[in-house]
Each structure stands twice: as structure tokens, then as C-alpha cells.
Length: 294
Figure 1 (spheres, one colour):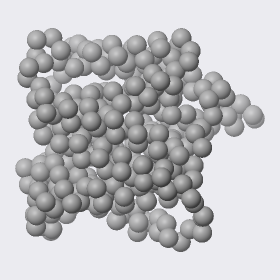
Figure 2 (cartoon, one colour):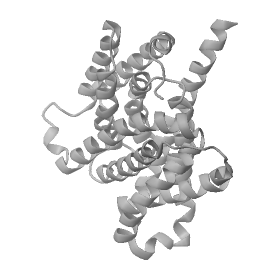
Figure 3 (spheres, rainbow, N blue to C red):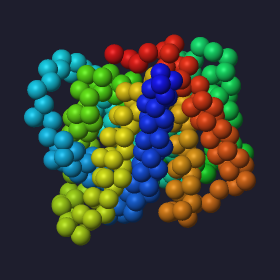
Figure 4 (cartoon, one colour):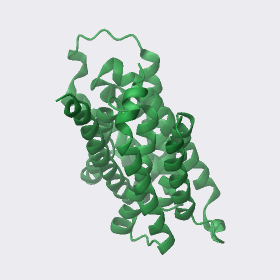
């Protein structure tokens, strides 16, 4: 009974995190269709603005009587979410989805490296590094990558790491309301950029169905699911489990955007999935020796 009680929350966290990744990348592929109409900035404004509105209507966090004082964690969570989304979409203008996510993943990877204490942890991280090395076009093709897009993707990685750290703390204090409040703060970051770039095009009724799809798939659903995982897993474990994200992004690029992968890149996906699976198997030990952030 005790063993089942320990494993069940871990299985739930891993399961919802996988669903979140698929939803997030499908939404990103959908969002690229908005780029010619409202730009990356407008797509980010749609994603976070409508996502926040949906969550506010569903959750209505103002009804909560919870007395929370950790505003710094909440604002850190929201601001990092907004900045991460904006620069990530800016990177998608010029580099493929799978490559952008692979570069963005350097943030959680560094977070996992800093939190590692056992030799086995470094084995999984080494597998991730090998997978990313194969996934990126480093063999004579690096000049085809737009350097500005690469810098945007790396900046998104910094935001992703901060999102994990602050998200744990905000979730511990505000519970499920942290997602709603954090997404609302993130929308305050993104909407001014979207309005400045796209202007009145953001208010076109014809774009609303596509924009709602992006908001649900890329914000409302995955962030709600990620908060479940964030409050049940240590930051190091959560960050390393996210290693599967580049693989999900690469597959989404193939299915929805017609991006093609080489044999080496498919090998990279296998290496990343093996690393994520290995990390998942060691989650239970990490939960015992590495408590959640408070």
C-alpha cells in the first residue's frame, strides 16, 4: 500500500507531462500558421492573452480565500513564462521547430546538471547531450542556421529554466491558481509586443478559431498539466524528463510542417527518449532524497 501510494503521484506527474509536451508542440506548429498574418509577436499575444482569459473564466482565482505572500515567486513564474514564449516564437521565424526546441532545452539541461549528485544522473545527461549533438545540424550545415534565431532559442532556454524554478515555488504557494495568475502576468509581457507589431490585425474575427486553438494547445492545457508535474517532482527530475521535448517537437515538425529528419536526427530522438525513460525510473529515489522546493 505504501509503495503504491509513493508511485502513483510519480506516474501521474510523468503522464501529464507527456500529454503537456504533445499539446505544446502541436500548438507551436499551429502557431507558425499565424506568423504571416500577425507575426511571431502577435501569435505570442494570442497564445498567452486568450490562454489567460480561458483560465480566468474557468478557474476564477479571485474566489480563493488563500492568503499567499510569495509574490516574488509568482511574478518570477509569470515573467519568465512570458519572456520564454515570446523569444521562442521569435526563433521559430527562421529555424525549424525541432532545432529551436533542442536549443531551448539547454536551459532545463543546465538545471538538471546543477542538481545532479549521482553518477547515474550524469549518464542520462550525457545521453541527452549526445542526442542534442546529433539533432542539431553541426556537420557542415551550421551556417544554414540563422544566428539571430539561434540566440532567441537559447534565450528561451534561460526562460525555461527560470520557469521551472519559479513554477515550483509558485505552485507550492498558490496551487492550481498559480497557472492562471502566472499566465495572466505572462500575457502582460506579450500583448504589448503583439499590438505594437500586428496592430488591429489582432482583432480580426477570422483569426479567432486558429488563435483559440493555439491558446488552448500551447498555454491553457499544457501549463495546467505542467503545474501538476511541477508540484510532484524535484526541479532536477522535471528538467531532465523534459529531455523528450525536442523529440516531440521534431515529430510535430514532420507531421504538421513537413520538416524532414535525417537518420542521425532520428537516432538523436531515440537517445533522448532513452535518457528520459532512465530518469523516470530513478524518480522514486530522487523523491526520497531530494524534496520539492518550498
